[in-house]
Image 1 (cartoon, rainbow, N blue to C red):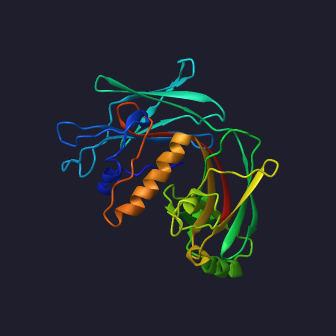
Image 2: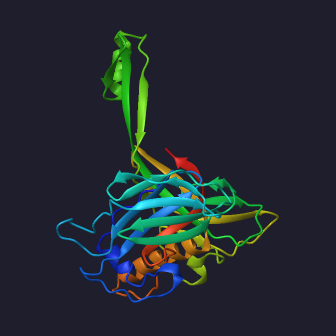
Image 3: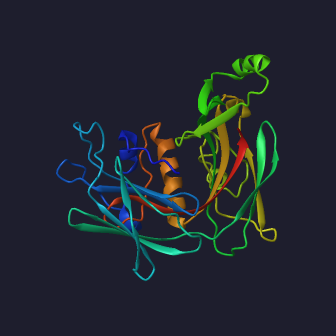
Length: 317
């Protein structure tokens, strides 16, 4: 499930140029004029998660206050209600997964106002890992769609824990290590070791690079090095296939109890532009420059309701 962390001060700065309906607006940030912030991704693989907060920092809330009393409705293209999202706490609202190729509408009712967005889930594609060594991988996209394509590539790291145990009289007996279990086997060869593996939902995005001049990273000579995402729009078809070489530092993959996953998203144009602008603004903010317009797709509010079709390949666990 995608994780949408609560907006911090840097994220607020990134939103200074943000607008709904993809029109640039000047936003007055004051305690008397809080703006609704809607952050969510809608895809075919994960339960939908939308986070609602306000744009004005609150010392009492030690951050940007959660919105806990909104009503979120998902509708089809004919405005027929599909479902109402459930509030899960901490500003998070949850709903069902999306279906590839379908059109959807979102309605957020909050404090007497209604905020809306529309999106279409991109069609399906297949992801293959053709080659991989200690410094690079070659990913292949197989896509039958002839529509414009907007892809993002990420390498994610998730920590996990492993609980080892064996059963004695129907009860779990914890074993702290493989070495401990090996010692137990010497005295009781009939023991059967079992494992429970739990993956942390939070993830870190690792640095990846490419020299492919079709990517936004290289075409505009920004986000080329030390970026957490690669953006590809100008797909060159060879039949229905295209490949991308991705460089990375495998020395960062040596931590124990970490799973590393290549995540590729085919996104809507609005979501692609939003993610690219956020990354570019974050990179430029390091030297104090905040001149990148960040456009969302929520009417009269900050944020994005991003549409994506996702494929994942675990490259190390």
